[in-house]
Amino acid sequence: MQLVESGGGLVQDGGSLRLSCAASGFTFSRNAMGWFRQAPGKEREFVAAISRSGSITYYADSVKGRFTISRDNAQNTVYLQMNSLKPEDTAAYYCAATGTYSFGTYYSKLAYYNYWGQGTQVTVSS
Image (cartoon, rainbow, N blue to C red; front, top):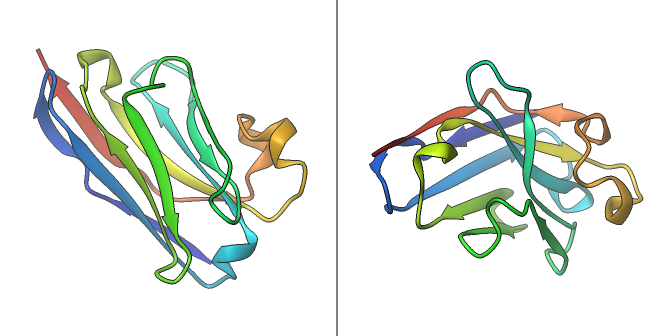
């Protein structure tokens, strides 16, 4: 069971990045997926989540309209397209997976997710 994030980096205010999370060792299509982030000195927070089929997505208010989560079940990969980045988006970004049901109720809760990647750093300069 492995989740590997990539695509992080340094970008200027207003720029874009696309994060990827490649999954292996489990049935990807049976897991809802989420993206979370953690800035230095702060708690890990919810960013976006997507259902098993990809038909349902949720976003934190702080990223709504700027970030887009998507998935490719054939490629066992989930993505996070981040546009109009701001310095306050600077954080380590983590993808997470869960095979548990009740996605619509718990999608933003850290404890809902069973598996986590190691994270990729996103730094937005002003």
